[in-house]
Length: 271
Image 1 (cartoon, rainbow, N blue to C red):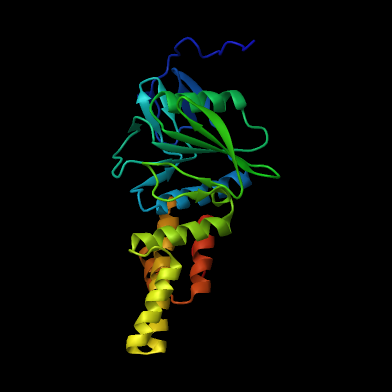
Image 2: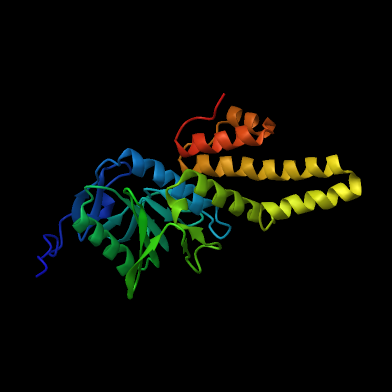
């Protein structure tokens, strides 16, 4: 028999009593203390956030953003799709897509209540990334049985994301970088990197092979630089003016990839 929740009766707290940075969420007016995230989960959060933010259909995404669909509820998903211009204070309503990262020792009762709060107030997709020796994802939707998705499968969120996401891209840096590159190229009007290369070949036929190769490399470099900027925005610590100038001058694809890695690991750009 399912034990009754200690939060069944409304609690005394309201979202407007909490401030940004307070280590609490609210469930039915009860304060739920947030615990620090382990190293594996914190790094994965950034990868997932950058992957979601780069999707061509997403205008904004964030990590630990506070959503309040009613006065007694305040939830901060690990990663969420945000309104284009959230404004000050808590975001009214709930995100269309939320991602939670769950590692060993996860409070399962608290996680279930969080999922229920999100889906019950309008969230269309909740992806719970189960971090362990063999990570996988739980896919939750309103009025649909939960299903499991494993590495090698794709996740989709019709009406929210333009592109499918390989399951492992939510925690694996290299897989996430591949998705970010594809997404950013599409934002610049290219289907994928092969199309950029093909355009370079065509340019080479008209203006010389070396010129075409240079054009293709420049297009790819522009996409990588855009990925760097998006990744640092996703961490909440965008590039400084000086760092941005250094990024504009960087042309080495290997070094640009190192910038992306530094952003995901919450490190400042390499010198």
